[in-house]
Image (tube, rainbow, N blue to C red; front, side):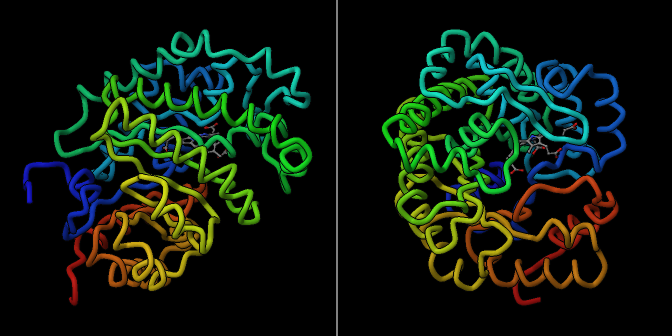
Length: 348
Ligand code: CP3
């Protein structure tokens, strides 16, 4: 045991911390009035991500309010295609938009040559956070999984069924592999640079992993993500990585056993007892409160939090949501959640 070490880092070394550390995916965002105030100052969402002064401020907002055990860099998974040269913009109320990549010839327009230069403000944000965070608060850097990012690049935004991207992968897997390979390479470099700028933990968000049958899930999610973990660890063997292959179902077992990461983020649908029995011996689990319980609050929230803690809290565990917090979340419910987790003791 190392009592002075940050609880998130201890948990990712396989230690059981009582109570477990807590942070929330998308903990900075529109549910906080202080975020909306800063957001109104930025010309657009990408400007917010690329203005270190503002990005630092919105990263710190949920830390000040709730004292979470980790701060997550304020940025977006789509800064990578932007840095590769694809046009990316965010329309109010419509989510992200990209000029879609529809022919393999168009891949030649994307290049890693300006990657670090475009992403320099993100590294600067991390350096400042590293200086400013309270000593017990871990700093998480992140990127999207290659499949999830590729899906936005190809579909041109959020999709219902991922028909264009999946059909491409089925018809021309060699072409599709070139897109994924570019993302493996750029994402690995991006994450390595994040560690060098001060990130202590990395999370890979593969939010749309769950749309594939098993072979596709292995080929386009598990393998690329495992390759990124491998490359990051060549450069920084000690940096812990958390994977979030949302919707992977029973294949969560393959992510626990084969990807080389320390942590695994469970989505809302993963059964808790199954996760304890099949996954928790191999990796530190993170999750998986339904974000809508945080909107609803009341007894339903209290009971669900207790059930998660009572089932997973006796092993290496990080409390989190099963997906990102929604803008409708009342900030008081987050306050309640944090106090429930901090008051929890096994068997009480
Ligand atoms: O967790 C954090 O607080 C850090 C910041 C963060 C954002 N996006 C900020 C954001 C993180 C980790 C992300 C990841 C992300 N971005 C994912 C993976 C996680 C997930 O939720 O599945 C995905 C798929 C994206 C792509 C993306 N960015 C979408 C689909 C949207 C629109 C949805 C929405 O909530 O509006 C965004 C925009 C975005 N990214 C916002 C924030 C705070 C809202 C934009 C705004 O404030 O105007």
